[in-house]
Amino acid sequence: MYQHPSHPTTSRQMRLGVRPPMWLLLASLLALAPATSFALPSFARQMNMQCTACHTDYPILNQFGREFKLNGYTQSAEQTNLPPLAVMLEPSFTHTAKSQEGGAAPGFRDNNNYVMTQASLFYGGRLFGPYAKDIFGQDVADIVNKIGVFSQMTYDGVAKTWSWDNTEIRFANTGSIGERDITYGFYLNNNPTMEDPWNTTPAWGYPFVGSGLAPTPTAATFIDGAFAQQVIGLGGYFSLSNNLYVNLGFYRTLAAHNQSALGTDPTGEAQIAHPAPYWRIAYQNMIGDAHWEIGTFGMSANTYPGRDQSAGTDRFVDLGFD
Image (cartoon, rainbow, N blue to C red; front, side, top):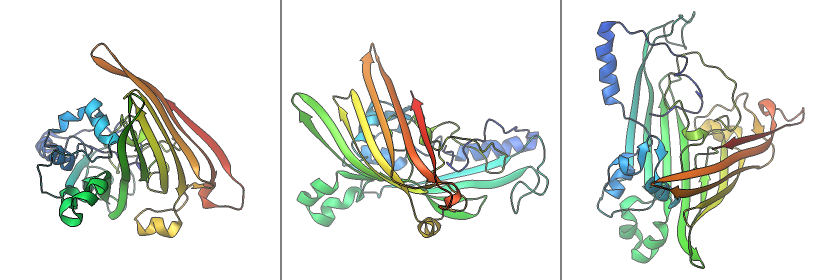
């Protein structure tokens, strides 16, 4: 399941103390919940494969999953006429070791709260799904079918609001440089690190699910979800011979009224003063029967704290290694 970026840590601090009758309800809820929101049924239908074809340890991608993402979510077995839609429901029961005086959130009790933490609608796969040929004809379809989408709209059951969530559109193609194969592409998304082909960067990081009704620490690096859904970024990437991966993108903060229209609250956020570079460089190779990878990612930005442009900027650089 999926931990919304606006709640960066939760499950490590929760203490579940459910009395015996509650276990039956909790078990039923968990049985209805998906294993992860990122093994999209629409991707599985498009490829006519099980989710485990791309994932061996959710949400991390295996080699086939990485190739699917590098190719812009567009590879298809051409065996479905269903639209690329998927739905996720995330019900929860939250019990904390100490009750929260005044309520865990507006409209909730001090403790022992049930809520539909999150409900998401996904559009994932080719931009026009399986219908490009019928709409445009084969020649145009050959081009537009190189454009793919991962789009998530989410209802927050705690805040009782809808908003856009992780969203990306990308164009991808293949070619060669001499005798070496290359996959390359361009993307537009709203969360730095979500483009990662390994799904090991913060947008996909642990914890994968948590409660919006449990107290959480607030300290975190900017790259660890602080800009999620507040920004728009444009970038390009290439993968050479399935060994070297290089990605460079630039992000800027959306205007406050645009964020509000998309369901994001811009109050008190750090505003990026100038387009901020984001990078991801990695090298992988086969050693024995396994792929091994070493890489780095990071972001550098000047920001206006609290969107206040009267007091100058703060500069930060976040670096990650894997």
